Length: 185
Image (tube, rainbow, N blue to C red):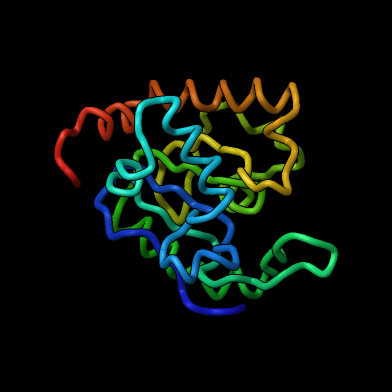
């Protein structure tokens, strides 16, 4: 994997957002979801009440792997392998232990698969899932990966399931808490 390590701001939040790994641009910006996928994801969140700045101030952002995994020879970013995922798991576990999040937002199939089995996104997106993650009972609302390489969230069924997931998120007590909180956490 290729450094630097990329992580979100140290935010005490009831929500933990977990991505796959930073892309090739995120290291230069020093923050997760700083490029194309982030622009798409933050538009989703803006639809339900929070712009990018407020999301970054109020949601703890982590990733399955903390460094850019490199390019896939067939296009896009390489998916981290099991050994890379295992080496970074200690960080995610520590974050869960500290935050004890009321809600986890796994973004993309790799992040979702850390919390629950997933064969098809259609089977998990748009549903509130009770989960036990690293020994912590919580809830999860999976989101598709907002990458330009993914067409899932732009198909008819994907759009409907994304809308369902965002509606669930908008009405979740943890999201309502961070929306109502007028001060920076």
